[in-house]
Image 1 (cartoon, helix red, strand yellow):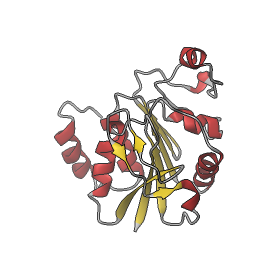
Image 2: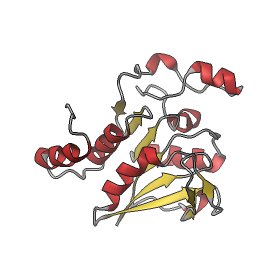
Image 3: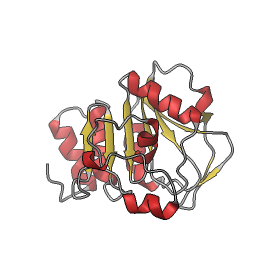
Image 4: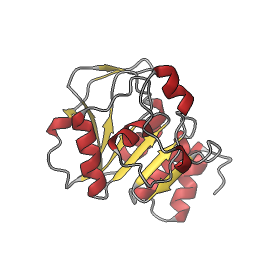
Length: 194
C-alpha cells in the first residue's frame, strides 16, 4: 500500500488539505499517514486537535511513500528531521505538495531552488515576523496562478485547496482518465475551467 504523508504541526490549517486527503483516502491502494516532530497532539488553526500517527524520525523506509503534503500555518520552523525528510523525498522524486505558507518549509529545506512555485507568504510577512526569508522571489508566480507544478513539486495559494487537490491527485496518478477527472471536479467546483 502506498502512503501519502501529511505533516501536521501546531497552527497548521488542515482544511487546506482535507479535500485532497479525503480523495486520496478513498483510494484502496493509498493510506494517509500524519507525521509530526513528536506524537504529542497538535492544535490546528481550524480548532482541531490531531494526534500524529508517527514521528518524522520513524519514517526510515520511503519505498512505499508516494509523497509528502504540508499545509500552511503560522508556526513555521524547519526542524533538522523534517528538512532531511524533505530532501530525501525530493532526491527520490517523490511528490512534495505544499499550500499557502507551507512552501516555506520547502524553501527552508532548499528544494525550491531553480523551481517555479507559488505561496501565500510575502517578503513583507518575513520582515513582520523577523524571520529569515528563504524564497527566491523571482521564481514565484503571481497569486493569480493558484497552483504550480514544477517536476515533483506542487505549490498552491491558500484559497486554492480544490486546485491543489486536483493537481496532487493527478500527480499521484489517481485519475482514471479525463472523464473521471471531470466528474470528480464537477462535484467540488462546478465552475471549474481547465
